[in-house]
Image (cartoon, rainbow, N blue to C red; front, side, top):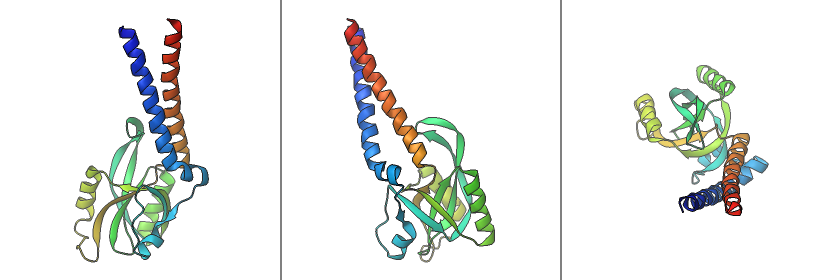
Length: 191
């Protein structure tokens, strides 16, 4: 009896993993297969609605320094053993947004651009910042933000979500889901 319940739990977990992976994959499929992004600079210039949860390209014209870091996690759950750093950027409208990165080369480009009044092009998923990073941003840029010309936002361009990392994440989730279902089927055939 106990074994039957465990088998059903495994089946439910497998189905759950498959449904979640397929739903997330559908959301990101256009970016994974084509690399298609939205130009965030153009959206801000045209005063359009911001493309939350979409993949964007953005030219950082006024990059600032790093204001905080966080532990990277695979799928938001499993610790990856590396850190991501959040950098502040002031856009054309005066909004201070963040760019999350863990690529050393991109961080060096960003820091050089901040020191030399240069620009940096980034690509990533445009999402809401974590509450912890918002507090760090407030501490770092709160004095700059006057509420009228320059203001803080909770948006971050997450450059850590690359096409390859998404493929690996979804493949791993798919394999876990399939393994749970196969174990259930094998358990049923042994009886």
